[in-house]
Image 1: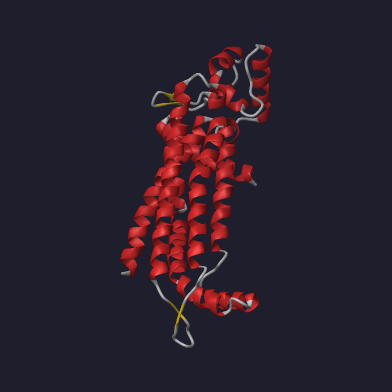
Image 2: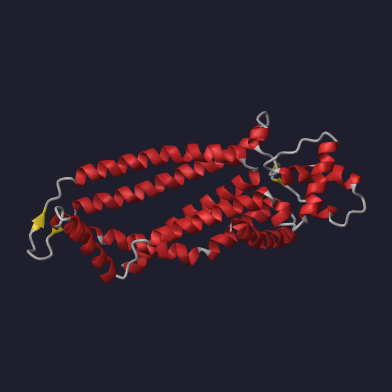
Length: 299
């Protein structure tokens, strides 16, 4: 499945590469196009999150009223979702799409000759064999990246090969070689620039999301919980404990996600880290803009 989507994305990336003749700028344009395609989903997700926040008061009332009857509580909550025309599992669809996108882009950047240049597998295997026979280093994980790096050598070995020009991808981007893998080039400080910027952007995005959630939770804490039948104000004793748990979870995520990002960016080609970096920057801008637009629309 991931290879199927990687193949489709490969046509788009190849089109953009032919337009700008640079792999780095092609990835940036590719990221922008993907974001624009997913924009309706992002808007729907943002609206769903805002609407869900508004339902919290009613949900707290239900949870308090039926705290000793979990089955009835779940039934009432599902009825509330149905009444408000909301799908409680809509977030799962977004997560699935993001996972498919993430792995498909990884396949694409790991094997650009297969999914972007559409090079036959036989040619790729031939180039790998020629490099191995010449004592060239060939990675088991990223053999196509090594083939791109050894373009001049392979061109001399295969001067009449009609497909040889398809591996001549310009990986230089603002002085950085996007074909390099940090794990394989530890002594080269330039391989850390994009991953570090990616980590910083991830940290900013997570902190921004956590701040928005905390602000929403503080507002909800100041709201009274009213019994819909009696009209009396109710008190939820465990609310502060729940808030502490949420804040602690957000704090852990703020540290865990950058650490996970470092481990991934360290073993992947810089082209993938560039895609993630631009994607994070666009996501931060998207959250800020949509949040303001949706609030203005509600007002």
